[in-house]
Length: 139
Image (cartoon, rainbow, N blue to C red; front, side, top):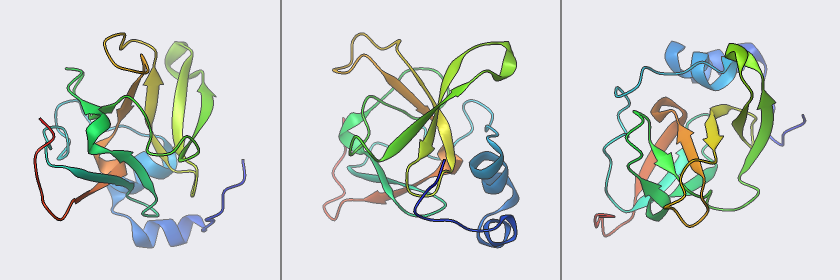
């Protein structure tokens, strides 16, 4: 896939911490329940940690009790891209940042109580949170 933002591996390594690089550029994952954004409840926007593209509004975040921040819809339909992931002996849908191709997490059709029925299960380390100016909570 081609993405508008292209950098060499060395450039990404210089911009990201080792854990960020592992998750964003090598499709790794953080341990469940450890992400700094898991319990974030303020109003704001979640951006790609690698390129700062806007990905998810806080109004679409919900507690899926899965150990990772979960959202039911991206900020814009073209904010993320999808790739079939056959690793770990199963078929899943990997979610990438459409701007830079960084790995964000996976999306699952297992949230029937949400407006889209989808659960975008994202790694905190893949995201940067920018609170709205008012900083009001989403709950």
